[in-house]
Amino acid sequence: MPLLIDKPTDYTSFDVIAVLRKKLNIKKIGHSGTLDPLATGLLIILVGRSETRQQDSFMGMDKEYIAEITFGATSTTYDAEGELSTSALPANITKEQLEEVLPQFTGDIEQTVPAYSAIKVNGQRLYKLAREGRVGDIKLPNRVVSIYEIEILSVKDAIATIRVHCGKGTYIRSLVHDIGQVLGCGAYLSALRRTKIGDYSVEDALQLGDVTPQTLIDAGIVT
Image 1 (cartoon, rainbow, N blue to C red):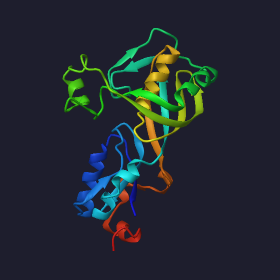
Image 2 (image 1 turned 90 degrees about the vertical axis):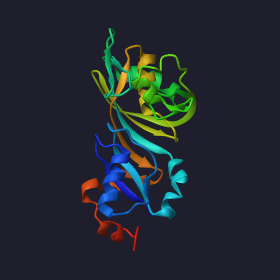
Image 3 (image 1 turned 90 degrees about the horizontal axis):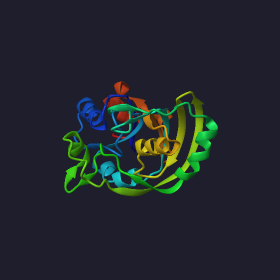
C-alpha cells in the first residue's frame, strides 16, 4: 500500500523523499511521478522494496490536475519560475475564446518537451543545457500524449483555471504554453495542483509535516 502525500509548494519531489527518509528512518523509499517545485498536490510515496518495484505501474496511471493559466506573457520555463516576456496583444481572454481552442488539445496530441525539463538529449538533461544557454541549437524532442478532458473552471480577465485529465508523460506547462500560442497572446502556468493519480485522490493524502513512523503502522504500510 502506498503512502499518499500532499506535496507543498517550493519542495521538489526529491525533497519530500529526503524529509520522509529522515523522519521514518527508511532507506528504500521512492515516488511514482515527479511534481515541479511550483506544483502542489498528490505524490504517491512507495515504501519498501515490494512497493518500489511497482513504480512503473503507478507512473502509467492517468492523472488529473487543476491548472491556473495567466495570459499575456510567456515564460522561458513555461511556468512562473522562468523569465517572463510580456505580450503586446490583449490578454483578457473570454470563456468563449478558450472553449473554441480547447478541442484541438484533447485526444492524442503531439507536445514539444519544454527546454527546462529532465528529458535527456545526447546524454544530457535539457534543463542543464538550458541553464548553460546551449539549448538554442538543439531540436527539442516531441512526444505523443493523451489528454482525455479539459474542463474550464473559471475565466476572469487574464487568468483562467482548468481541470485536465490526461495520460502519462503529459506536460501541463507545454499545454498551457501552446494554448497561449494558439490564442495569440501568450500564456504561462502560474499554479498547478495534482488532484488524482489513477483512483488515488489528494483528498486522502497526508500533509508532509504530519507523517510519523506510527503513520505507516496505522495505514498498514509497515508492521
